[in-house]
Image 1: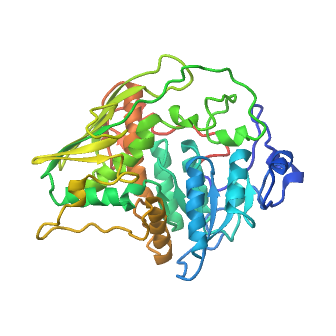
Image 2 (image 1 turned 90 degrees about the vertical axis):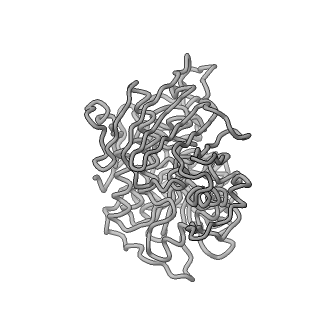
Image 3 (image 1 turned 30 degrees about the horizontal axis):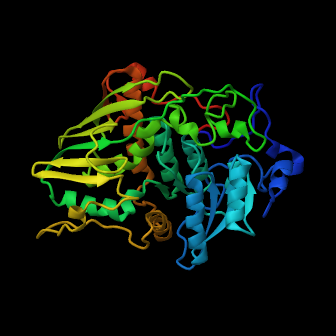
Length: 464
């Protein structure tokens, strides 16, 4: 695994303005004009430090504020910023820095946090700061692995958005980096610390519908790029080279950014890798199946007829687990049993239990909420500090850091196993055949082509 990176600008990659000597300074409270005229950086050099150069984070005392930085401040990234502001107001953390390759997003984050926060475009500036204890990563999916691995190697705890990774090999690298550097990595699948997920998990584990033999998911389709547009120069506020990061270089197109990375296989993987990462995490928890890492997967889908986005419009995926035997089905659109946009159904020997969404934004069904633990039943532990499940998930991460056990509710190993389900579903669709997955060896049985696709080249220097 590489432990240092240096900026390389090839014939296709323009040099971002943040490397200009005149921009190499810290900034606070910038106006839009200064963003566009100066570029935005945090003080520090551009190399990733080898593991062990910085002091190990260790256990942080109960009265000590965690120093936090945000990498990625668009979309969900701003939800994380607002959550952290509440923790800062409570005296639990300090937001030291924010980072984004899009100056529009960065300016919003700086304005929201207020005076004193430093800002930059290149995440490597963040990682070199010895005063920062932890980072919150909310960049597009193709960045999650590289930034998490590099943050771990710099001795920082990590909260990273789901899905953990876009390839199986990336996910394993993330787990290894967390363990080698003894840091807590929490993946943002919040249902495992939310009330809806907890009520459902408690009821399923204690037999509300008997033995569950099948779980089905429904979800609306992936969108189609119905009005394609030509490639163009990137907008002035965007560092396109840094946005691409590990991806192969390609011209800018508005159908990539902002917000549309989700609909391309290489950068987002569609609904199954987005919402599937939420739903599958909750399902594995309810089924006590985190250790059931071997299964078969077979996917079928309908490719879009036009446009840049290549994720299948409709998609059906069937996973078969053994010992105990049960089936997981992803339906896009599937059989909509509930009332909301997506959800899942636990089908048991004595009935069914519906969970709308994934157990985070929506409450559990009333029968799960009102479920009474039977004699000898097993309680399910839960972090229960905040009504807001996003806040609760971060509080669970803080606890893992402060108590030194470094295993939050959605530890990176859990996030990796969940992302593997999503990634193999897409791989089965792309190859057009059933795959037999050996979870212990982390390889597809008897399929050399599929195993080659468990990894992919990454563009130097953004490699793990």
